[in-house]
Image (tube, rainbow, N blue to C red; front, side):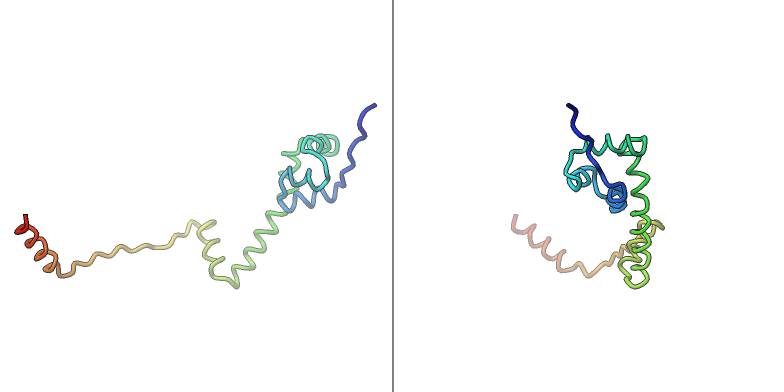
Length: 116
């Protein structure tokens, strides 16, 4: 006798994808293994987990990006980070060279010649 087909709630599955959960996390949530999730995706969506996940995880990425942009309006660090990630902005590093009075160093080096 064949094992009964595991029932997986489609809305819950799509919500977990939306939250960027991994295959193992989703399988753990439904108390099954990753092969069961993959087989369920093939029966339900006519494609494997990977392709299904790509479709249903996009909304989560959009929500995260939306939240980051709202946060950047109030948080300078987030605005700087987004500028670096998306706009190629970098922090300008200025190299300055200063020549101080090197007389004490020269005197020290002259003194070491006498010790040798």
